[in-house]
Length: 116
Image (cartoon, rainbow, N blue to C red; front, side, top):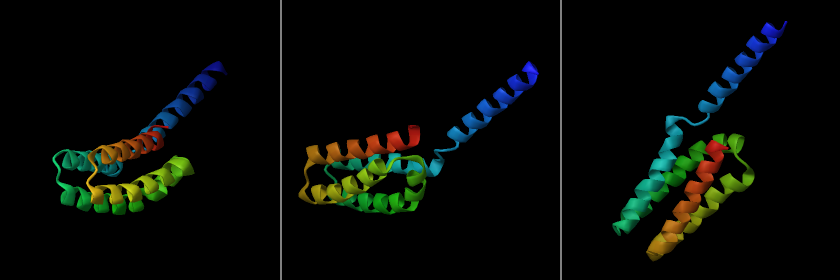
């Protein structure tokens, strides 16, 4: 009987572990990569490119939002939306420090959502 519980417990651990590792896919890495791309563009003062990349990132976020709603709290996925909208205006103003700060906040929200 104890052996059955051991096997059952091992099965549950393996199932949970494999399910958690499947939470973040390669498509989800796109958002992390886009944040880094935008940061690099801002550092190089490529403001038009950063703006274009941010618009693409916003569309990608909208496509991935359903998964973030399942994985994260409302505070986090809505925080990403607010930060993206704010960042659009900050990039128009070409504010390097504030842009990087907003990107760090977006990255933080993404990390919290996908690494719970």
